Length: 176
Image (tube, rainbow, N blue to C red; front, side):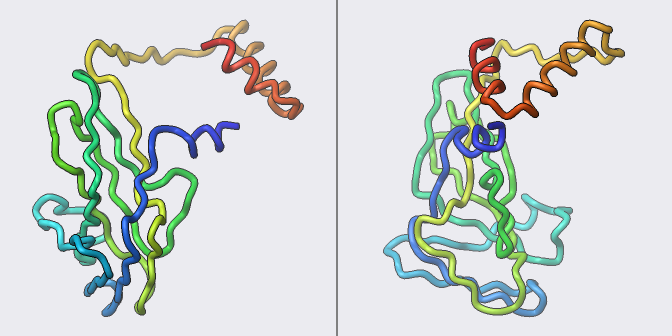
């Protein structure tokens, strides 16, 4: 169930049109094309992603044509689609204060596929957007050994989860 919950968390931004990426020179050169009346891919300002682990591959960005607005105090975490591996592009993760940033959030990426032409179909999941509350959240942690009661509870949860009878879904949801 945690796997499926991750898939359904937040929103998935799909690719608005089919995009062709021609990757050459071991990923150091990327040319993009599309059949759409709006820009879909452009180069990204290198200074904004300087030192990324994919250098010398050029930073690119998918143009997102959706504007996401959240209530005051809320931001969004933009991540590659969870539990959906991609062997052609790696979309970078980032947090955007979508309560004040009122323009579309473009999606920086690097092409990681092998040299050749790669067709990314319209509707392909590009990014997952997970809203979260910024204001008033206390995320302090306490690091300590677990108590005997906590150890027993952890073992009980582990055993019940392995039983596979839907226990996780019933108990975890009821506890919320």
